[in-house]
Image (cartoon, rainbow, N blue to C red; front, top):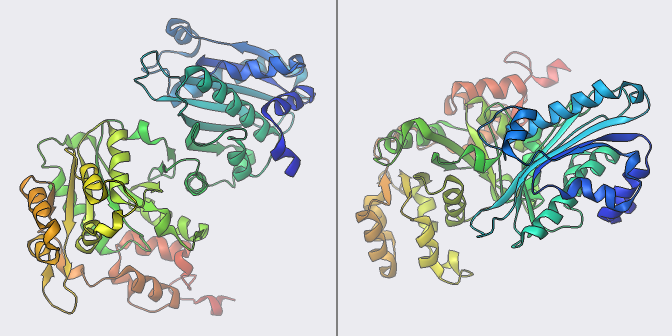
Length: 479
């Protein structure tokens, strides 16, 4: 495995060309022309390349792959893979017993002449792991950060070769993922969506792949939907109104649900919010997924199962500070209204100047982003410590030092923060860590602290080390 990691892009392309068992086609739109070219440049391409095609003109592209609204999108990529792979099987049946067929496709947008766009694109491979075997798919979305169109094209060529090599010579999905940026850095290429699927990869949970993209630094944020399907953030959230709740969700309790429902009632009444375009996100940061840099993948999937059972879309991010999250989401939605739900004690940390010691502009720089024109914070109350009184924004100013009180007043007067006044205070005593401890110990009564769907999911699938196989038979008795 060490030798594989040391191979250059050219060496990978040559090894593929010299293998007599790998044969297929390349279809490329836009800036992805360097992938097929990489195999021709190293020699021996006749052993690998059955066909290359570049449907650059939109009319030609539509005539070959069907009409679509956009040309740099996953839908277009999939239609390319389907068309080209089917042609291989149709036209080369005499080679089927000896080779592993593949069809590589990409549709890529590089920097324009004015450099006013974000270089990005879709790259995919439909491939066999053995002759006459079923096909599998590897699909990725990339963002290109080079400030030169030619360098972006070269980078796409590297990723394409790496994808074909990884899928043909590696079997571990994480190794395939990590190999995609061989010879590159994340300063040049970012991979914010990856899906590996097919009969030979039934064991792959792509929600876990989304987590690993963030954990391994290939991107800062990744997403998946309620059905577990991985999503590309800028495509799924484009011009949407977002309502975001950050949490540990270990497990989801009545408090989490109430925070979402009450904030949504407020958010949808904002004058600049389109109710038909609201997307509710539950966000998990790497900080909340593990301690000491270690992430328990089983625990992550348990939380994902719970959140998905409630019909929620999940965002995994490496944006520990709220202002970084706000900046990312604002860029992704193209400036549409965003609501961020936050507990009152979390807001205290936001106002602590020491939080921004490493930021050049300190607290003011972070607030310029966090409280931008399209951002509003919905603040959920809590009980005051050692008191039976509610802690809300009405009491918040008095907890601040004199240096930030005027700033707080400014934000309130300009509608950047709002109390969630209709919160269900009867749930405020629920602490998720206590509920988790009860579940793991098999104590009775934890069910009343979580929604019914969460209770059912925990019991049915044995999540969070739930110690009962059913309501009747403890694990020890079942053994």
